Image (spheres, helix red, strand yellow):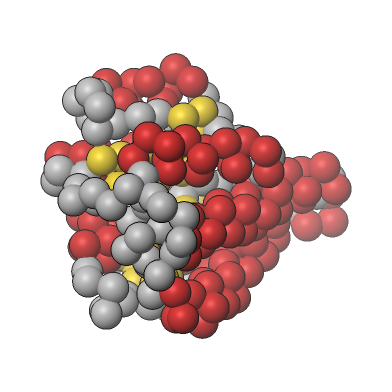
Length: 258
């Protein structure tokens, strides 16, 4: 077991990155409503404060403004979790960016590529590493990391090279975390989400480019269904793990895409 002297508590403690809106907010609210202590993290102070308010606030919800691409801010986030709650059970590694839309591969600027990689891949690694250290050293030892992948980890959309590359990389990150975590009772899985109804998918209702060059309206699903799936994954005993889960709008163009 870890020798850190961390305080053991009964209630489960979750960190949710990218919690200021969309899927991150939905998951933070679902966990809070289920009795978890929740630490919403993200770059926008006002949005995080709104998530905390919607979650009921109080001592069981502690928002921590964080840019996951900044190592010092990630370290501060997990230090705050340790100091406030004494342990961490799941991390929902959710923060991400699509980058500029509709930009052909040949025209994508290096700065835009790097920005997506910094958030989606480097940020996910930094948070996973910090969570791993905390879970390894706490008593009782162990925890769970859930990475937010994407349907794009399997089948890309047109003009999405940066986003698609980072989501494919999440496969390797998830598998490595799963393997390296075994000796410390740390489980890791990934959820791949397709067309959850948020402000990010509003454009689906007016039509988005398809692989065959057409523009088509796509169905969406309730983001609450994603949040409930994450809660299920997070609630499993550490002896069990959902390694990969895919939750998508039933009729979206994924099976047969292209």
